[in-house]
Length: 563
Image (tube, rainbow, N blue to C red; front, top):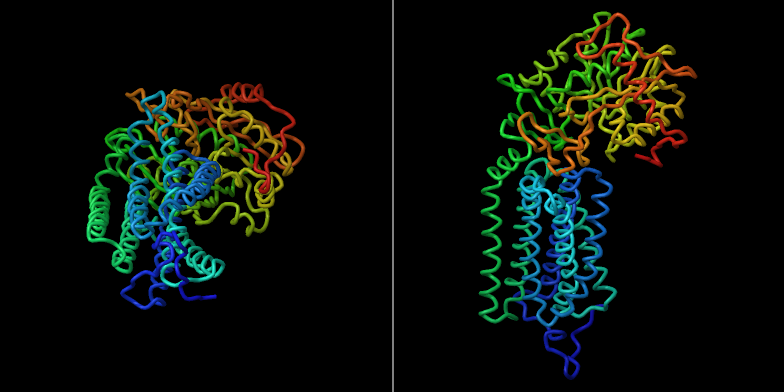
């Protein structure tokens, strides 16, 4: 119920209960405050999502990073709300100060995280944990400032026109939650694809400080002294100046940071609707490296060893019709097409941007021998799991799962019992499925969990591994410690993980060759002779993989991922 202002109780500070001297009618004033709540809530959620996204890109394991960011932020918001009680006597000035600080911290957070990640992660010691520590620090600081907003806005809206506490809270939270919805939708559909993380965060900070400053200096200016108005205005302008300078330098900063992360021979850096793609080298005799979301997906020195091991053991039986799940770079397709009796090759790739680069980029197209231009190849842009659900008939002699590493949260569904059950439906009775299952030596439990999931789906499996060079790349987007490779002339890892753990790069790739039924398929190369793989080597590496066996592991499922 809306009530007129009651007189201030004896001894109470006047700012608590005395009505604000507004330049507009109270109804308009309340609307402007609620509009500011809406804008601030949208900005706050953008900051949260930006931290989660950056943490996932830079450190991997999106579930862990999201849990850390959100739990720390929610905790800090509670502390910030308590701390804001001390500012209620000066709610207008305090709100502008909070918004200026939030705009500066939130707007610059992405740039600061990227800088620390790019230039300090290889220093060792405590610096190796710099990005994670900074992530927690930003989550804490932004949460404190967001938590301080609501009590101050509640004080301001009550000073316009007294309202019962329940009604005021309902109005305030309604505007807050609707604003959060808009911010949550704007981040993935507008800010991230059109502006990128750096500029998007800086623009959000600009909107934040303008909204807070305009509300107080426009609506509550009569409650502020001339000196206070001038100080708040100068503070807001200073924050805007910092954000504007950062935005102007964002392009040069991003290029410099990218070179610090990937090396100086970056040729292509694009963000598709699915991921960031970076190509380094591939010209003038330099090996080509392909990074997806900062993780080394293809290392030019080792990719042939990996792709030959992935493809050729599966093609020793019938292979007229082949399905590749993933493999948008065209390198697995190159190996399949070396078998002239392949009549049709279907490739299901999530990212059309990667497929386009595989076709058009001179370095990548040369590396895959222009495989995607072969008339036998038919490319479909789709999620592999969703595509398999809609597929009908036992159409394929061979299915090749050239997919991200099982240790990545986002790809856990592609290594589940359900996924392999769907793959079995599209296999011919005599068909084979081959799966890249991550490094055997570094993560044997994950490797044998993949085997358990295949067996739960009705497959019998033959394990094998293939060693890489000392610069072995992670055959899927794995940004875990040590998942990147060292460059040819440097002691640092060329990919985003430049910590001392980078020297623990997985020096093997684990594979599982599977067939429906009780009998595991034999591991042989037949009459085909790949460039880097021999039958003797394959047999020895299969025995090496089997020595790491871990029995009794449960299968990974969609509702119980175990990687």
